[in-house]
Length: 204
Image (cartoon, rainbow, N blue to C red):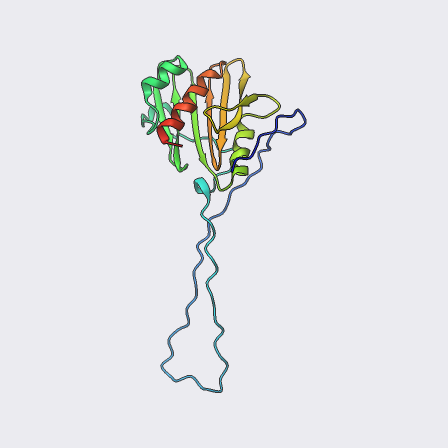
């Protein structure tokens, strides 16, 4: 199922509301064994049925607007499992001087640095419970009132555009998966190519 993305100047951009889903372990209480025979006239023990397990939270319950955290920054030097460093350097047009991943996400988020302090490329692959939640990720990353429609690869829907003089975004979703790429380059074709490569390599 695909949830269409309506591009209208009246649509408000997603707020930074916290949507953290708290994980809770639910255990069933069992009656203690009794060595004495139960009285036939005594009250029957109430039958207790353990509550149904809650649906696991996607990406460990991280809010839709969660950005990667790499504590060691550019000094981490952990390779991205689905993007080649040479491809990233050639596509974004900058040498990769550092990289790291955030494994809080089901598919690790990847961050690449060049010489500037800020990352040159940030790649998020979000696995949500519903297409509407995946769309929320895209609407947060590429607000409909500030970006243009995006529809590549085929079957994906979202937004693209410049976010300022030194940044751009390409964000698309299909079903319950959202892919977001932020670049420190103004041309959105660069994050688009990275997003398409991530989707291809992950078989999404």
